[in-house]
Image 1 (tube, helix red, strand yellow):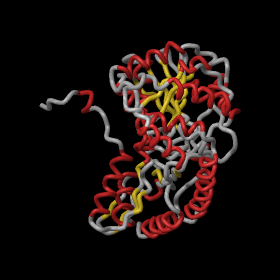
Image 2 (cartoon, rainbow, N blue to C red):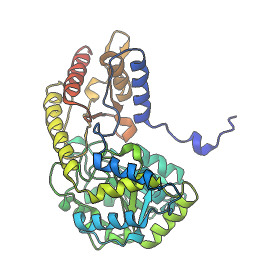
Image 3 (spheres, one colour):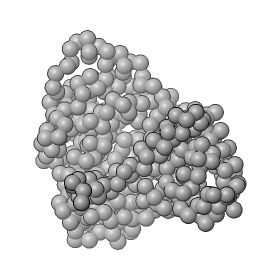
Image 4 (cartoon, one colour):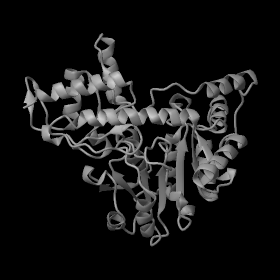
Length: 397
């Protein structure tokens, strides 16, 4: 018998981290691996943000911070939400955490009791189901398909609701599909939530600025349900600050107080230096963000054109984030040499070992027929990677 807890033994390993690790192991052997598995911008943090961090060090921001974050940062977040999203939150409804992942985990742990159900549209970000598992909740999946741009309808949502439903959890723009819900599509979901006043909505908006369809729409914009929305966001994607680990949530006061209490027993406040850098990011405007988004859009268009040239895969044009989520099930049951492709994980391992391109199995995101491809890489790398993928797939029969 193992001495480890059932809790940790029941937890799955992150497939994105696993594939990145396998890619690094091949690279360490001198193999030229193109990593399209990791979900982070390949840009550097803006200079003005880095300068703010250096200044914070010099000014001795080296002490514990309030658990929920510096008041000035929380006020800047509230101002941003009002300015950019038309959302009115007081600063004491904001909890700053060590990345948006911790904000999500705080919300799940503070909302979900053992046996309660959390509805999650698939595909979904890999950690959602594991967070629900840690809270001893039950995940109820709603399958969305490539034909519908991986988005669900209000009718699908209502069909999944039971007396045990406590939370609905989703992302827009979505990781792994890049799907973006419009204001009208969100209204379709809101019409259902209005019938069920005991359901909370966790809205993961970390890719907010990386969208190619115009102004971001948040489900928190609907006054009828706003008090039940837990808005999750952060600095990692928009400002290329993944390693700084600063995220936040905005919610009603009772829930934000509960998350402050939860966080106080686990990590306390996030890094003082990182918080000062985040403050500078929100005070510095969107110029660097917009330039990065334009580059991502250019890459998206290039990769989409290349992927549509590959036979037997089905791919849609994503409206946000920096991922493609092509359906590849036509290759299941094929083989070449010692390689036999039974599922998406087999295909990912084949592409890694044969094409030396690292991707992630769609099974990790709740769809076993797809794989995730990140286009957070330089254009020449992306062209080379898709060319390698195409050549490797042509060998399968």
